[in-house]
Image (cartoon, rainbow, N blue to C red; front, top):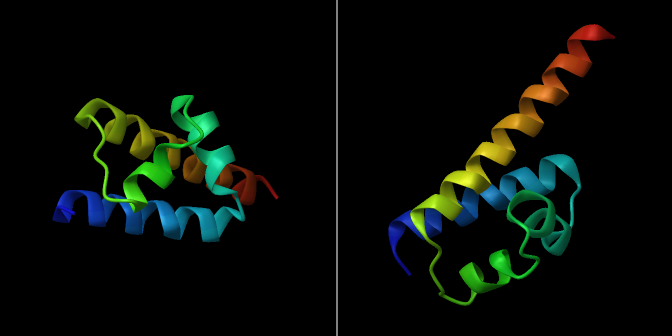
Length: 72
């Protein structure tokens, strides 16, 4: 597995832990594919555009969470 995908998996795992989100649900809501994380974990690859969408989803959710926290 390439370092790029190892880093992406580490980012995803941290996000899932932070938001208490399931792997399949994360894949479904972020890129419309409930198997994307399982594929990465089994050594598969994703297109750069898919990796960008995954990271954009995580950034968006963290931003929304920070705004909610600031509003309280």
